[in-house]
Length: 194
Image (cartoon, rainbow, N blue to C red; front, side, top):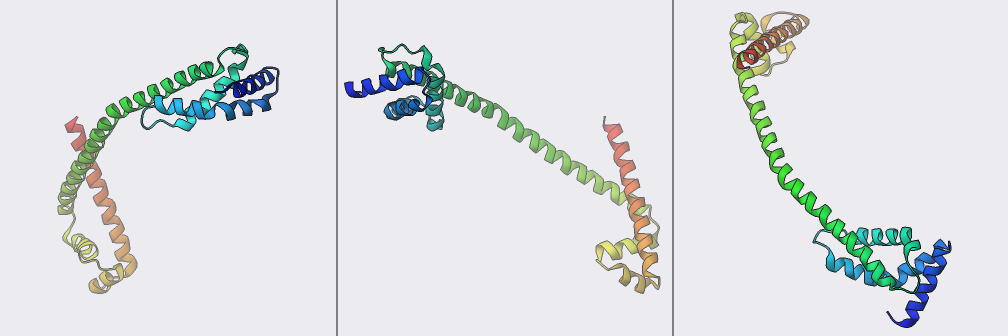
């Protein structure tokens, strides 16, 4: 930085130290390029350079009263930049370490959950088949027409010479009976597996 810029910088610093906050913009304008270049050289890939530079100037503003006029302001500012770049690198390393430990565990947990749900689904299907065997033949015929042949309740009622309402009511009772039977078997199966 040439001597004219240094005098200009010292003038801005003195005004900021005496309460003129607006003059800090002049400090930023004079120092931004050097600070940005320093932070870029010191940062890990993936660092948010703009965020680090912003934190450097925020800290400089907050601590401007600590700076002694006539000393090396850029050296003082670069020491803040060095610390901020180091903090950013530490944050990225912690994040990378966290992800290296967390992601494999999360994937393993999700795979275990899916396998468990698949096994539960297979067990539920097996129980449903057992429960269907306990349903009288007439009820099984209605369930077969509705769920295997995909017939509507009206079609079933017509084929069986019954009212649509009676078929819908019987379907509802059959579903309830099957649900209770499967739930009971699932509960008993889980208590034996514990």
